[in-house]
Image (cartoon, rainbow, N blue to C red):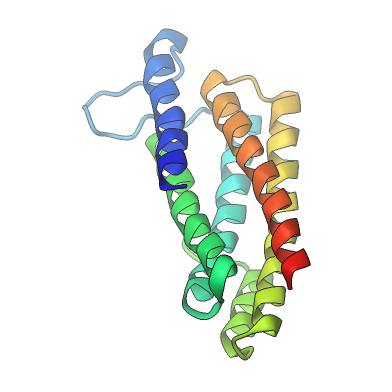
Length: 177
């Protein structure tokens, strides 16, 4: 699974480098500096919505890494790594995640923190992840219908595939409980 995350991360980063100059969309005045974000409204909305959904999943998954059990803890560990990778890729394009989580996410994090570890915690986490992943899938599909920036489209396509896998995996994990 770690190998797959590495391949996905490279798949997200390499297209950015390949498309940055030919498309004329970004400039990298200094090596190692973030490129300017794609400026269209669809691209900005996609990046902001993806980062917000990812930050929500990350916050909940960090709790689950500490408190969930077995396969669900492992899923949470993969989710933490993946959300950090996606945020890093979007940061390379100049997008920044908001610094705080929204109120519904904070409420869920509080619930996960105070719920007794075990089946109830695992079920609450999986329910929240199912909802969050569906929202993230909707964000990617919406962008793929309207977005034009090749890098953002590549990111959306890769995220969409991973989210679809996660939705199936969450379904299987929920059936185990």
